Length: 229
View 1 (spheres, rainbow, N blue to C red):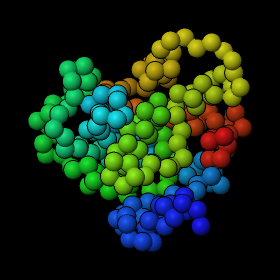
View 2 (tube, helix red, strand yellow; view 1 turned 60 degrees about the horizontal axis):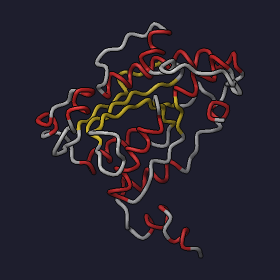
View 3 (tube, rainbow, N blue to C red; view 1 turned 180 degrees about the vertical axis):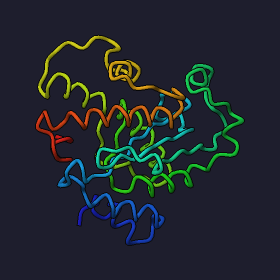
C-alpha cells in the first residue's frame, strides 16, 4: 500500500488520529453533489475576514455564511463566527474589516470554530467571491490543526458572472475593477449592508449568486456538474 493511502484522511480516521467531526466531514466530502440539479443542491455562500493576506502568517478572524437552495436564500440557515485571536491585524487590515482586537477576545478558539464551520458546510458546494483566497485561508487553518485542506467543490462568483455575461470561452478584455463585488452589486442593483464584514459580504454574494443561477439555464447550465465544469 502506498504512503499516500496510508496517510489519507480515511486511513487517519480509521486509526483514530483525527477528531470525529473531521472524520464526519471527510465522509460527507466523499458524497460528491455533482449529479444533483441546481434546484436540488445546497450551496453555502461564505466569506472570511482576516488579519492580512499572507496565508502563512495571517489568521481568519471572522466567518460569515448563508445557504441557498432551490434558488432561494435561506437566511435562517446562516452562520457567523468570530474567532479568538491575539490581534485583528495591522492598521491596513483593520481599516478594511473594522474589527478591533477587543472584539475577538470572546470569539471561539480556532478548533471550535472549525468544528462549527465543517458541520455547517458538510459536503455541499461552496460559493465565494474571489473564492481562491477564502478557500486558501480556511485550508491554512484546517492544515494547521489537522493537516487537511477544505475539499468541497467551489464556485467563484467572479468566474461565474463572466461566464454568464460573456460566455464560457470568452476572450473579452476585462477592465480593472469590473468584476469586484461592489461593481457587480451595483450592476445588478444589489444593496450591500455591512460591507467588509463577513456576514454582510456573504449575503451580498448570495444575492449575486441567486441572480446568476436564475440566468444559468439560458446558458445551458442546469446541473451542478455543468455549473462546476
